[in-house]
Image (cartoon, rainbow, N blue to C red):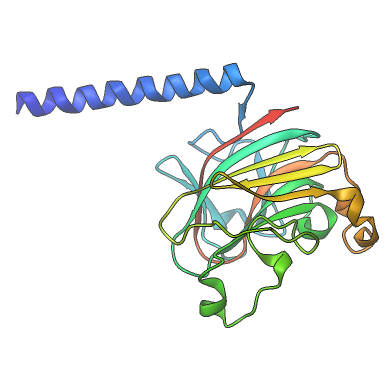
Length: 220
């Protein structure tokens, strides 16, 4: 009993120092946390209901039912954003907002970086995805060059760099999209968000439970 107590105590102490070290490292590297792991302070929903969003054991999650977009109160211009996400079941669908206005129409009036279960979505929903609807795409505009996304139950790591007119997306250590938005000005009428230089960031509730963690941002 005593040994078990000591072991559990040691695990707790090590966990505390691990969290503290991670926070210190983020600060040194210039990153700011977007999610505090406790509640949704600093976030609001647009185009949906807050009931579809929640916090569970330090994770941000959406049920995928009528949640719309969860966007930050703060705006950002040029930045590097990092996050991890995973699907609960096959066929999940979500997205990341880039330079978005406060709206539920992020995919056109802002920029959406698509998140979707590439391998399972078509089977579950009997729907053929377009190239610009796959994970890592600038949704509806620029397709990804490859699909290294992992399936349900596994964590995916994404890094998005928005710098000037360039949008770069890295998924699980591989660059999947490297777009110059000036090359797509002909689509600005349908996607006016391509012309934005600043806006809010966030995540989408669109299909199935999705969990997020380690959301952080570094202004450039």
